[in-house]
Length: 165
Image (tube, rainbow, N blue to C red):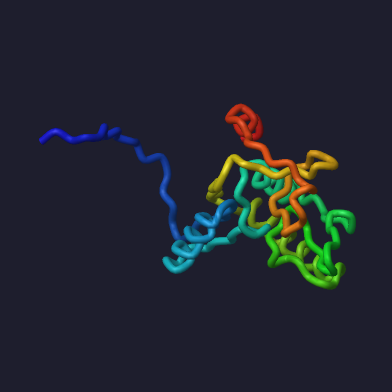
C-alpha cells in the first residue's frame, strides 16, 4: 500500500536515561514536557525564568545561566507598586524589591548549576514575535502588562535567530 508521506529513517545517536539530568527552557511546551518527564522519573530542572516564548529571550537566559551573570538592582523595575524583571515570568514579581531580587538570584544560581551539569538541554520556542523596549530596543521576555507605548513589536527573521543559535 502506498503511503501519503515520506518515511525517513533516522539513525539513533543517543539515548535519554533516568540517570541523565535534563534542563528545559522555553515555551509552555517545555513546561508540559518537564511534567511528563518528571512523572516518568527523570531528573528535570525546568524554565528557571518562567515561560519564555521568543528565541532571543531564551538565548539571553541561557547566557545569563552559562556565565552566571548576577542580577542587579537595576534589572528590576517598579510598576504600580509591583517589582518585576523583564526577563522573568510574573511569578517572580512582588511588592518587595529585595525579595524579588533574592528569589531571582536564588533561582538563577540553582539553574546555572543545573545547566552546567545537564546531560540534555531541551529548548522550545513559542513565537518569532518579540517586544522590545521602545526606549532602548532591548528585547523583553515579559511585558508585565505595562502600557503598549513602552514597547515596539517586531518579528525576528530566520537569519537573526540562527545567528544566536
